Image (cartoon, rainbow, N blue to C red; front, side, top):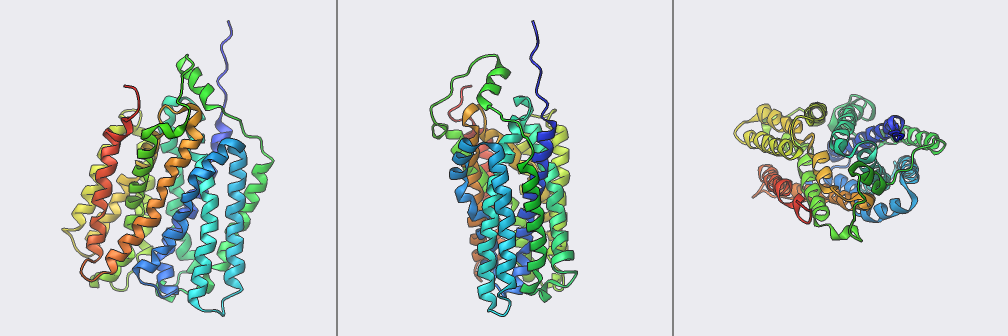
Length: 413
């Protein structure tokens, strides 16, 4: 009797890791542009948060793209996503560079439109990365592989704010930012992405059938429901991601407003401190990848939720830079929430994994809607930045409920 050889997915995982790096870099770079845009385009807090709306709003296409991925497969979606990202950056260069003599308001809307195009490609890449990592190996190690890939993604998120300061701002102060700083760095990113797209087009990646893989792992042919829409935990998982995005993006998005609101921080730039938040997420993800084998995902997620809420809560009892460091420390605890929530939402789905990934990714629009609301609250004299940050406690509570209750609804015990 011959034993079936376990496929070697090392190369495929390496490709996905490169994609995860690009996702993290572009996503964090976009969020880190908030302070830049505030100064270059003379915006208030609400207007500056439209950077998040334009980018994360593209995740409204998650379900259609997820269904598309079910038809054309992982590799085609990967290549298409890279092509759209690259073209978005190139179009950004052409639009802004050709209209520098126009009004800053017009240029800002062009910038937002082009970043929406870039984000459409990132959505496709995100759809590929999450389920691909889940199925490239033993199912029981899925959360570990996803956390590890997100740890490497965090390397990119730590580098992105440095890229803004050294390449786009060219070590100028944020208040000296102008629209002409944008075009050529974005052109370079576009050309790099298009080159990666061409390389991947000619590479051979494995075709994976999640249903067959799950059957092989369990030794039985499992029966699945006829549609992914019949799994309540998937939809509740999408809402958990929606709330989680208010946590992950809430701190860095509100940091600039906090610096402006705090007289003792005058002259300091929020962008210079974002690397510590994303660096904390990087460290947390590497640590999380190492301890997942020792703790149940739900236990680890609970500990991180409590830790993150404690950091944000403590910041209200501190002042000046002490409060800033407390908020930045929350990144350490926010680090593994995404892969853990995503993993809970993708439980026991087999052939519906691709479509479910699209549904759960839809929750990312939380960053497109929650942060502008927080910006509006921060602009209101009767409310302020503190009240905007308080909204994060609502997000913590829902994710905690999903961890222990919502993720179990509709699944057999």
